[in-house]
Every structure is written in C-alpha cells, then in structure tokens.
Length: 244
Image (tube, rainbow, N blue to C red; front, top):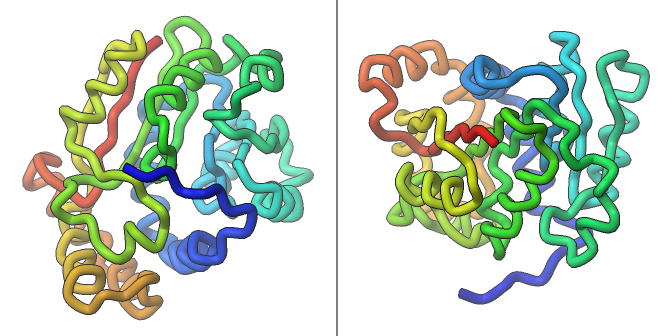
C-alpha cells in the first residue's frame, strides 16, 4: 500500500463535499443516525465545509470543529463564527508527528469525538484512532463512519485518495486494538450501493454526479425505511461506536 502525498488544496474532495452539501436529507439521516451516541462536549474530526457540523450547531450542542486543511478551517470560520455552541475551529492532523505537543490541551476533554468519512483517507489508521482516544474523557464515545466493502472500491475511491474500505469486523478490530470497547456497530445506506457501483465501477465517474445525488436525496425517506427493514445488515458505509 502506497502512502499518498498530502495535498494542501483538495479540489476533488472539495467538489465532492459541495455536491454532498446538496443532499440535505442524506446529511440529516447521517446526523440522526449518530446523534443517539453523542453526548456532552463534542469534537468533530474532518469537518470539511460543515455539512454535518451545522446540525450540531443548530441543535445547540457544544462542538469543536477541526480539519487537516487550512482552506476548510477558513471556510468553517466564515460559515459558523458567531454560533454560540461553537467551541472553536482547529487545524488538526490526527497523525501529526508532534500531535502530543500540539494538541495536549485537548486531551481528556471531550465526551464525544466523531469522524465521518475521514479514516479511510488516513494511511496510519491505528495512530489516528489512538490519538482520538487521547482526546476523549474516560467513558467518552468515539464514532467512526467509513466506506464499506473493499469489493466496492472504484474510481471514486481512487480520486478521493481512499486507502481502503471496511467491514464491521475490520473496523471493530481497529477499535479494540486501541483500548476501546465496542458499544455499537452497523451498516448504513444499503440503497447507496447501487449508485456507487453504476457511477464508479461501470460509468467510471471520478466525482459523484450532482444529478445522481439530487435523485438520491429525494428518495432518502424510502432508503431509510429499507435500512430499517434489513436491520442495517449491509450498506455503503459502516458505523462503529466505541467507549474509552
């Protein structure tokens, strides 16, 4: 496995985030899925342009936003500064060689740390999860959402610099090897598999088409029902919640 060079300007990632921003129902579904596992003071890893952050802020939940890129941090400041629940915006690299020196002020500070569609971008996933552990208070929750199933890896993953996709078992193993007790684990968004296969593997798109995401967004109500019907036994993503 080759380590990707870190890009200060992430055009592909930003284009994807802007497209996903159009999917308000999908973003709300993701938020509603993780919210029951969130408590107290929250930190978001990889806030991007704030597609999920705004739900926390609008619900008056105290949250610290962070991202690896200054361009995203600047966008977050422009969008959210002045929101009372906002605890701050921090440029943070979970695998920074000086992580302990730079971010020790945040150690044992948060009741919840979450990262949605972030860990698949990180070469050293073990170090990333270990550093999340440091940020949490004892009893705190770590929530990770990542893409599911390596057989779904396609042009979207390559363009977005994904190292891997996960199964529930593989993600749970990363948690337990870093002292977390797994509290909850599930798949998410089974209906999204079809679109991912058609656009990424068959049509070889490099960025999710806006028309496709709009169509999906309009059908989220039915896709949520389908996930309940199959009891989250498979899906485009996998979510794991661990306790420190």
